[in-house]
Length: 236
Image 1 (cartoon, helix red, strand yellow):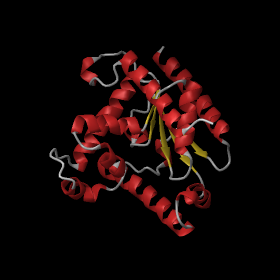
Image 2 (cartoon, helix red, strand yellow):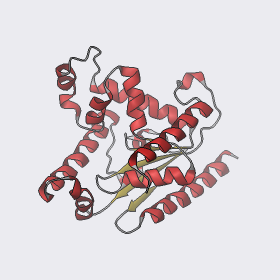
Image 3 (cartoon, one colour):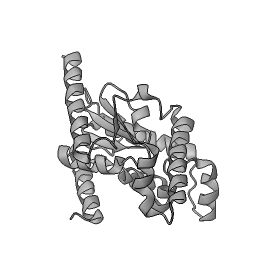
Image 4 (tube, one colour):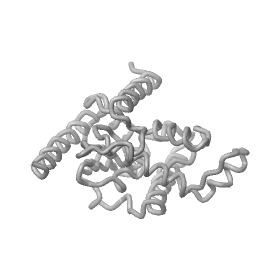
């Protein structure tokens, strides 16, 4: 059985290869590519299995998955600790500055600055293409022409069931699912001026309670092929 550490190692290997081959971590000003390749932006409700789908899709396509790697890069650029970014990513950042100050971090960074840096990095990934971005408002901020925007949802009870084992009781799981969904929606709304629940911002929406993991990936792959055919026709 593949361990979490092994999965992370595989994901990082793909990411590093992607960086080397396409210079992802350089700014967009450093390259002037004619047409960016396709990027898959995956948005998900908490407990809908977005991480599992994105990881399997990354393996099937052999495309790098950018999730925690994004925070690692932001941490490098900002000087803010990785574990702190893990706490704050996609959360309502009203308490952002207070926590940073309490840790005595020398280099300060506002929530707006973090969002701006995140936007810049996601845009750089888009310019190189052939990658998957999980969350981080990518489905809302990336141009639709070369992005397959996917939303993964599931009924509330199904999602609570998925995360319940991580908590002492079901009530905590219910509150957690509600809070995470709220925080992600607020983050996207405040810093990218989009509604994460607006169905018109997605090309494909999948109820993960009705399809298994492989079927979800196959649906996304079929949509990707269809979108690439349209892009090729438009640009011919």
